[in-house]
Length: 507
Image (cartoon, rainbow, N blue to C red; front, side):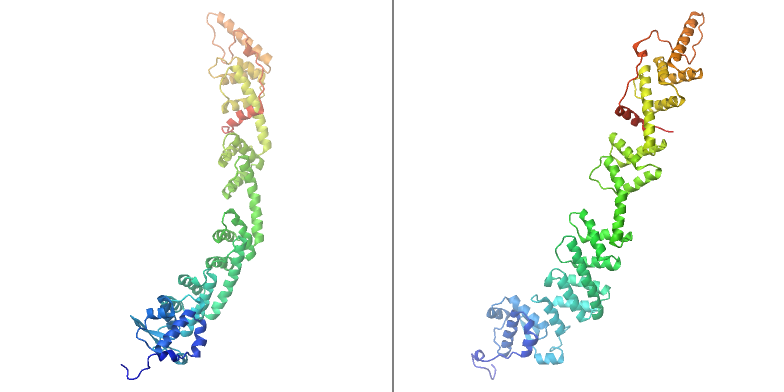
């Protein structure tokens, strides 16, 4: 046993000196439980006991063992004691005056800068920093060249802007440090300048969030996007807020979508809200006729696209008027299609007929109706049961251009009932009649009678002469079909007939 020692119970009535330096420099910033552990440990230094262990201290102070260990770790980092053993843990308390005067603790704690460690811990309040946390911070300073005061600025910035407060992760602090290093913000002056720009970005990003209807603080990533929009792309806050209107196209507006909108406008060199509004109006003007074409096709709920606008512009370049395009769209819908490309097919057919305006189309259709009426009458008189084809329309057009009368054509048709190719027969007959000046139905019937009389005379001769190729056969008697009355058709019936054949028409 020791030669000299205090009597049992001496410590109860003795004092444990606590330096005012500890109170002023350390205690005021430290968590209360940590202060209790330090003072109790200091008492054990002055009055040692054999069972002074972490569990014993935990029981004596009514604290968790982890809290006791965290407290000793905290005081070790701020430089008032050092750990001298691990199993069981043991600590050596420093003389605070010596530590203050020499600027280092007994034994020179590795990488321990008392003021920096205390300031760093102060930023996190009651969240006790671990040894690995300090290691990561010192690694930032060493590898990226940050001054200590800049690291403190960086950490404070991350705590305030992360949205997590003192729960911010050191991984996110390292990422932000990399951004600062890339911007050259490693000294006090450059960091202050950079923080001023970040402050403007924070405020601007916050206004954008409000414009998007979001009531929260901007994230670091959102601030970075705002900085890119303003400093790299040159957008003003007014232009950015104006562009927020485009985000209404999605259910949950966000910075990522707005970034795509601004990227597109940056590529188009639309930097101000006025330029954007002008471009938007121009786009509306371009898309309006495309929207009308879609409406004519019966297409609802589909927005016009740039591709459709280009196709529409190509139609105008071909020479078509807008109204002509709308007519083609309405026709396409009547034919059972609502496809934009089918309108182009219709316009190509019309282009072959040089039908570029409503007036030209109306005139053409009027002629086609006339030709259709003629064909329907001729088909009925000749007993043709099929629908007119494109070749029939071309033949009817030739008859019209040559001035053949419909009633004359019907006389020829009456004699074509038994012909192998009735339409070719009729064309041959009326062409011969035209050469002889036969221009009326009366003259045509007379011509037929003369031809029939010649046939009877030749039949009475021993060797009948071959029939004239252009002479129609004479019917044995007049029947109801020979007294043909032209039928009237509605416009809808004629349109259905006409439009069916427009694609096949060629000049």
